Image (cartoon, rainbow, N blue to C red; front, side, top):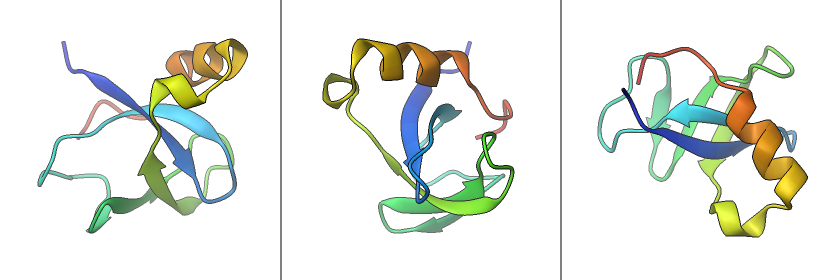
Length: 72
Protein backbone atom coordinates (compact mmCIF):
# COMPACT_ATOMS: atom_id res chain seq x y z
CA UNK A 1 0.00 0.00 0.00
CA UNK A 2 1.45 3.41 -0.92
CA UNK A 3 2.34 5.86 1.80
CA UNK A 4 0.51 9.19 1.73
CA UNK A 5 1.99 12.56 2.65
CA UNK A 6 -0.03 15.55 3.83
CA UNK A 7 0.33 18.58 1.59
CA UNK A 8 -1.12 22.08 1.39
CA UNK A 9 -2.10 23.76 -1.86
CA UNK A 10 -1.42 27.43 -2.52
CA UNK A 11 -5.03 28.24 -1.57
CA UNK A 12 -4.58 26.68 1.89
CA UNK A 13 -6.35 23.35 1.38
CA UNK A 14 -4.87 20.29 3.08
CA UNK A 15 -5.04 16.80 1.55
CA UNK A 16 -3.07 13.58 1.27
CA UNK A 17 -1.06 12.58 -1.77
CA UNK A 18 1.57 10.01 -2.70
CA UNK A 19 4.89 11.88 -2.59
CA UNK A 20 7.89 9.93 -3.82
CA UNK A 21 11.11 11.93 -4.21
CA UNK A 22 12.12 12.37 -7.87
CA UNK A 23 8.97 10.57 -9.10
CA UNK A 24 5.82 12.30 -10.27
CA UNK A 25 3.34 11.11 -12.87
CA UNK A 26 0.48 13.47 -11.93
CA UNK A 27 2.47 16.58 -11.03
CA UNK A 28 5.15 18.94 -12.25
CA UNK A 29 8.09 19.02 -9.86
CA UNK A 30 9.57 22.43 -8.94
CA UNK A 31 12.26 21.77 -6.34
CA UNK A 32 10.52 21.00 -3.06
CA UNK A 33 7.16 22.01 -4.54
CA UNK A 34 4.87 20.41 -7.07
CA UNK A 35 2.07 21.64 -9.25
CA UNK A 36 -0.84 19.23 -9.18
CA UNK A 37 -4.61 19.22 -9.09
CA UNK A 38 -6.10 20.01 -5.68
CA UNK A 39 -9.01 17.65 -4.90
CA UNK A 40 -10.74 20.42 -2.90
CA UNK A 41 -10.88 23.27 -5.42
CA UNK A 42 -10.24 21.00 -8.45
CA UNK A 43 -7.64 23.37 -9.93
CA UNK A 44 -3.94 22.98 -10.56
CA UNK A 45 -2.09 24.59 -7.66
CA UNK A 46 1.37 24.61 -6.16
CA UNK A 47 1.58 22.15 -3.26
CA UNK A 48 4.14 21.69 -0.48
CA UNK A 49 4.58 19.01 2.15
CA UNK A 50 3.28 19.84 5.62
CA UNK A 51 4.63 18.21 8.81
CA UNK A 52 1.64 16.59 10.60
CA UNK A 53 2.65 18.15 13.92
CA UNK A 54 1.92 21.63 12.48
CA UNK A 55 -1.77 20.79 12.01
CA UNK A 56 -4.58 20.77 14.52
CA UNK A 57 -6.19 17.37 15.19
CA UNK A 58 -9.19 18.36 13.06
CA UNK A 59 -7.03 19.55 10.12
CA UNK A 60 -4.96 16.37 10.36
CA UNK A 61 -8.04 14.12 10.32
CA UNK A 62 -9.55 15.93 7.34
CA UNK A 63 -6.25 15.89 5.40
CA UNK A 64 -5.84 12.15 5.96
CA UNK A 65 -9.39 11.45 4.79
CA UNK A 66 -9.11 13.56 1.62
CA UNK A 67 -6.83 11.78 -0.84
CA UNK A 68 -6.05 12.58 -4.46
CA UNK A 69 -5.37 9.92 -7.11
CA UNK A 70 -3.29 6.82 -6.37
CA UNK A 71 -0.57 7.80 -8.86
CA UNK A 72 2.70 9.25 -7.49
